[in-house]
Image (cartoon, rainbow, N blue to C red; front, side):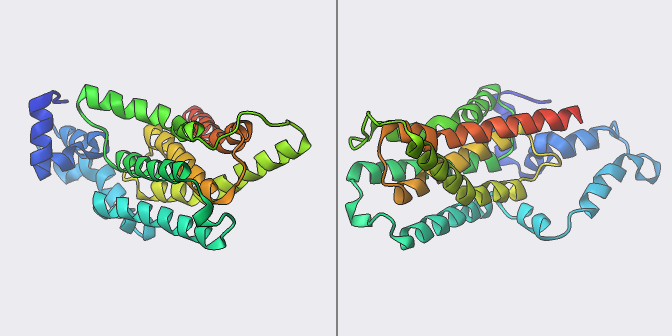
Length: 250
């Protein structure tokens, strides 16, 4: 596989080579099977033709949209969920501290960054590929920035009510953010979704769920935030990791 700065610069400027290198260079690898000559009856193209023939339905339509359009779909879904939560008025918007609003905006900006990273094909540059992998493995902990908000309290009595409140926030945030994970799965163009995209999807759930919980949960005790809010990303990452291991074993 061509690698290095000149190769990556050419791929960015050449639309034909960009198609060859998308989805882990699936098209380029299959064309390379011909060894420069077209075989009789197109034997080497049969797997590719079958994969293209199977591209039908809603997911095929979504996968065929441009990266910008797919990114806007993800942002639109997140905005709709946040507006719906804001309309419930569980916490009056005027009573939210400026620090928590700033943290919420930061989480949304990170949501856009992670979504774009998940929708783009893996980079052929080693340094950029390592950064993508590091982001995929560490994005679940980004909502911890809320711990630095001035209104977060450090002490709380850990009783039966604590466990119930924490589980309620965890379940509520996970359920509302789960459609963003499903949409990211539907928009991925890979034949088999790589673990990198699944890990970034877990991070997307963490970021969106914590943004929603800012508008839903008035509890600002640090213990509750860690157990009921921040744990969402870690649990989702562990779930996709175990699911990926099971898929490979099967």
